[in-house]
Every structure is written in C-alpha cells, then in structure tokens.
Amino acid sequence: MSSNDRKGNLLNCISCGVDHYLVKPFDTDELLNILHASFTSLETGTDTHDIQHLKKDLKILIVEDNKMNQIIITRMLKSMGYDCEVSEDGYEGYLKAKNSKFDIVFMDMIMPEMDGYESARRIIEYDKSYLIAAFTADNMPESRKKAELSGIKEFIPKPVRIEDLKKLFSKYFS
Image: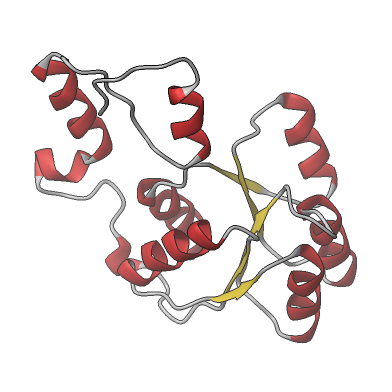
C-alpha cells in the first residue's frame, strides 16, 4: 500500500515479488477482493488442492540465484511439509542433479554464469526422466518455447504463490 504513488512503483513492486499494489485511499471492496483472491482457502475453509494425499518423501532441488526467492520458496515448501536443497546457479544445479536423483527441480531461468535454459538442457540430456519446473516472470511465448525445447515441462510464474505449488504437486505427486 502506498500513499505516495510514483511512476515506476508498480514495476519495482513486481520485481521484488509483491503480489498486489494498492494506492491510498483505496476502496475496501478492492482490498477484500484481493484478499479473497490471494487466500481462497480462508473463504471456504477448505483448500482447493489437498496436500495431505501427496507423496511426502520427495527430493526437491531449487536452482535460484536470488537469496530472497530462495528463502521464500524454501519456506513455502516447508509449510507444505517438504525439505529441499538449494543451488545458487545453473551449473551447480546441473551438478547436483547429475550426482543425486531429484523428484522435481525448480529452475530459475535468468541466472549469471549458466542460465536455467542451459542447465535444464544438460540435466535432461543426462536423465530424460527429470521433472523440471521453471520459475519465471517472463511468460512470453518465445521464452516458453525456448524453455520447452530445453526440457522444462511446467511453469510457475513469479512471484511464486503457494497455490501454484500445490496445484503442481497435486498434478504429479498424488
């Protein structure tokens, strides 16, 4: 929420992972709509994706260079009952995936040294059975096509939302 709306604030918020940006004064209905959209399980008292019936002993690898994103994603997974390993760049992620089998790899696409596209391509080249999901704010068709050609099967938009993770886990690990 901001009472000092300036040009570029929305873009800065999006790049920092902020889900919603409200300018004061705002309508309370607008705030309630955002809360209901973001926390759907609060309204009904039930979760749309039941995580209790999911496989629990998953090996998860997060390949993400941004420390804040690492913390957020790790905490989301922990709240779902999962532990994970973290790699800070694409090359380190590729090496971990090559040396230890993971059930799912969450891959940032834009990283220094080796980007997510190249890392995913090398992982799939080594073991075609890997499930790799992209974490990306870039949802352009050409980027999706490039990711799919690299072996990436799923896309989680940034900022990452726990509902998107639950939906993905329900699809693959029920």
